[in-house]
Each structure stands twice: as structure tokens, then as C-alpha cells.
Length: 112
Length: 119
Image (cartoon, rainbow over all chains, first blue to last red; front, side, top):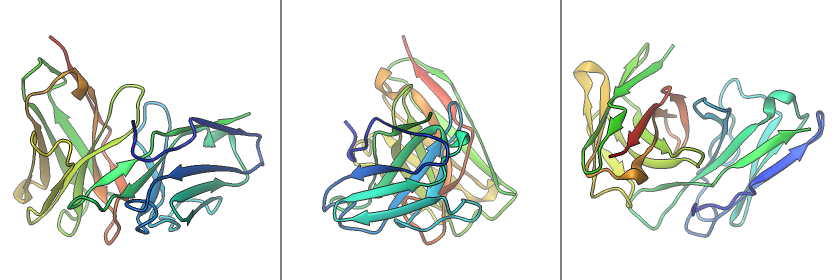
């Protein structure tokens, strides 16, 4: 069982927006602004989309938007494209140990 | 362009030690944290641990008793050892680079090494 809770699947049509949630506790998501999001296509290594809750690395389109409210972080993808179909994972610093990072269980995004 | 090339044994028997190495090319080795992450077949990601060029390291509490992450700055490489493996350690193991100044943000990844534990 993953430390962070994500919906198993979400879907949307091309051009639409979808939001993926990532729920934790005050010891991880709610306590720190160290939430990141990853996109993973089948058989490939993950790719970072968002870090520090809402920062985008160079090269990541601004269609990907990260936010956080209390113990839940969210990834919103606007203007859905076929190539957005992938698995998405959230990751957070977890502060009850010396240093620990925890991932969500992953969300499968289907572009209809 | 920074690349991570990883290698190690892909098939182990229970109780053996997993050993993987990741070499960094095309960029600086110093100033970054270098990370190991694994993914069991069909499942999610799990953070294993990290190390920097001076040997500063952090380990997952659940794996801490069995893992050692080391660094060889002369070769721009870092390594993972996981002792007493079981079938539960079967996974794709990735090495990755942490974005400078960020926490839990990995911008460069190796291709992954599939490690299977089976008798």
C-alpha cells in the first residue's frame, strides 16, 4: 500500500482538462512544499513534470500545472493530447523520519 | 548532455546480494544528489536512497538495514548493494539525478535494470 493516495485511473477527451489528486497527511504532502509529479509511458523511465508543488522544469509545457491544498496535491493537465496517455505518479518528502521520500500508487490517464 | 548508464546482474537467487552501478557522463558529478528508485512489475515507484559526491547519504527506512549506497568520484559513478534479496525485491531499478536545490525531483534517469529474484 502506497503512502500517498491517487485515483487508479482518470480519463478525458483531447482538448479537455483533467486533474489527478494525491492525498497524504500533515507529515508529508500537507507539511512540506516538496511535492513532485512524474509521467511514465510504458517501458520508459519516469519524466519529471512538476517539482516543489508547482515548479516546471525547463521543457515541460505549461499545460501541466501543479498545486496543493492542505494534505492534497493536484496535477492538472489542460489541452489533453494523445501523447499524454500515460501513468502519473506523485512524490512527497515525508518528515517523520530523518529523510524519506514517498510515492503515490500511480494514476493511469486515458485519452479517449 | 548528461546521461546515466547503469548495469548489474539481472537474475539473483534468494539471499544473494543485488549489486548495481550507475555512471554519469556528459556533465558534472559534483553538487548533485544521486538516487536509486525501483518499480516492481506492474506496480508503483519506491524511493530507495540517495548519495552526494561527498558521500552524504539518505536511505529508505524500510530498506535501511539491507542497503548500502556508495560513490566513486574518480569514476563519476555510484552504486547500490541490497543484501538478502527475496522475490519481493524483483523490480526495475533506476538510477536518477536530483535537481539541484530541490527535494524529490529527479530530472535525469537511467534506462533501468530489471532484477529478478528467483530460485
